[in-house]
Image 1 (cartoon, rainbow, N blue to C red):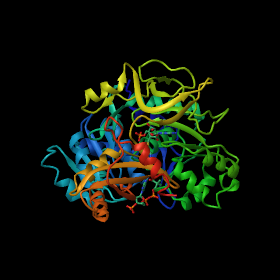
Image 2: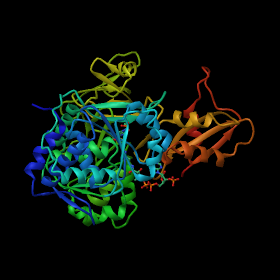
Image 3: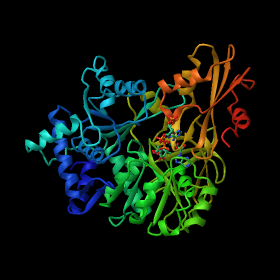
Image 4: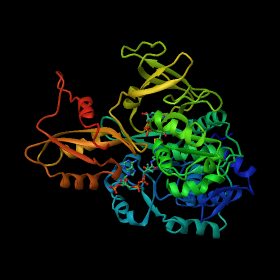
Length: 504
Ligand code: MCA
Ligand code: AMP
């Protein structure tokens, strides 16, 4: 028996052979049998290129149906899918490909020459391009199709074998590759199916990117594992979302999606009337947003909580009390506990470090056994989030033990930006903080100490060259010194208080 997660998806593709499972408005519609057949062809093409089970396939492309076929083909041939945010700059990409020892990289044609230049340091690297429906990946697909190379086999994988590596940043050092196994994905989709009553009758409105756990494993996997149709938009755009909504039943998004929908007066009970479930996660959903959404639509957004390393761990109930400000009880099969600084278990209501345990928890960080060991206590994974557990079993995330900014659902570790700034001439030191932002939840402020008056335009330009656009500070402050406590540690809480109105 194989534990390849693709096998679990394939059963549903075959049950829904003639059903339209993936629709791109204004573009292609693919049935279950299309997805099965085309992933078989592309999987043969990948094997033909020399790809072996366990090889890493890194992918930085635009969202589209071919992205879905590629994802399925990579799983099918037993390789490891490594999605990358299309906003990452060339220097960010270089680190991921080198660290992961990528065997195949799929990118847009514009990035090709840079990736080709990495072949000297990553000898086994091959590169294919994909721009919408054209590129050398499509050529490889067509060649395999013409040669009738479409092995229907799904390459056998053990439950603990890797299905994916997704990089996540950290408070110290370089981003770490979270190793996600086939059984992690099957387990998490099973939990969510049960918790959210997901079925083949559901139609998912998919506007999230396909390069994070949220859009790929929570949204897409859940729908495909249930044989449920997906309406896939290229990105979150309120106009397109409002148009597709009357045909959908479930939507998943980060809080920014919901605040942007609420900002549109056309979003009302009529447009949302066909929907059975709106789900929010990746960042805290403000109680005001939840309440405003409820009064506008008559529906309470269901908030859930998870991480790249764990997939989803907690969710408000489908039936029962969906509590604004809480992420609900643990999902079926998940255990949670709240731990004090001294390692003891805390009673209900007290704030402590949230730890989780279950079949959804990842295998560890790629090539980093010490970091992995440091973040586990036996089978318990230390999330780095601060939380409380109520008497009736609801978790509330009340803060972060880690120095992290979440902007529009994207995680940003200040250290990465501070490292770039501190390297610049004239900068003595810097502190980067997140403060309330009406659209993104949190916005980035850089506070600098310089030898003389600093040229913030020049600093902005350097950041833009080295860091993805969503990591750029949008407000710049220069001080004579950073506030420090008696231990010499920068007091970021004071800076956050001082500049909290920067975006209001
Ligand atoms: C884009 N920009 C941003 C962000 N996104 N700035 C701050 N925060 C952001 N999130 C900047 C760009 O650099 C650019 O600036 C300008 O905004 C316009 O870019 P564009 O791409 O057009 O922006 P947008 O379409 O308005 O995108 C905003 C968005 C998007 C819709 C909120 O970021 C998004 O879809 N976020 C969801 C991310 C997600 O899937 N998160 C899940 C990960 P400039 O012009 O100056 O360059 S967390 C996860 O998976 C865990 C497991 C979980 O719990 O879910
Ligand atoms: P990532 O590392 O990108 O997977 O992001 C995971 C982090 O996002 C978690 O550790 C939390 O800090 C945060 N997060 C995810 N969902 C929620 C939520 N519903 N409420 C508050 N924070 C969340």
